Image (tube, rainbow, N blue to C red; front, top):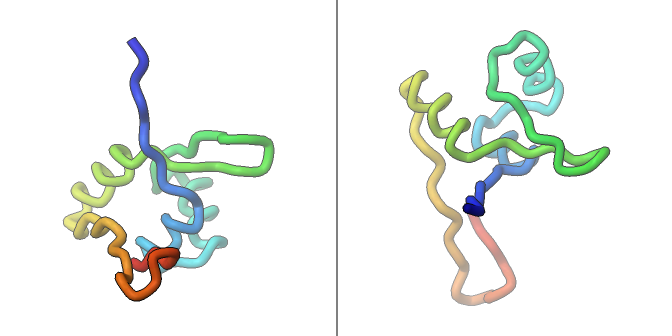
Length: 78
């Protein structure tokens, strides 16, 4: 049975946590954040369910789904 897994991109994680890229890399090296999935040789992503579990353990709010600006159908807003 095929299961679809949703991921957050690196930039989405940085936006959600409001931290810098170097801080996230430091957290990952120390084992303080969820494991990343290699999407390609130069791209990583994070399983949404793992990120949500990590946030819940720390009493942090879950990210809101993106909302769309009705005035510009091509703009995705957070």
